[in-house]
Image (cartoon, rainbow, N blue to C red; front, top):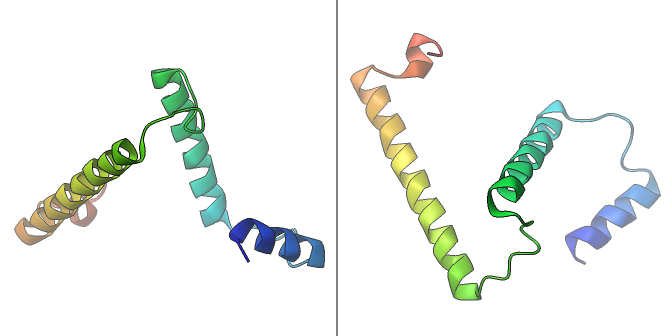
Length: 90
């Protein structure tokens, strides 16, 4: 069963109640903002973007490479005591 079918099954069974998770709500809002920024920048939705599989994989690879750099930067800040987390948000 795919995720969409599972969602419909759970929704129809009443598994989704009025109680919401603010963490999930916050992430959803962030995705919506990110989508709006992308549409403004590129003039189309992600759905409308017709890159090849190779191009999508290249984009993913570059995003993951950025993530590794962010991890290393954070580790360096924690090691040197220059972390904004330790000093409070700058």
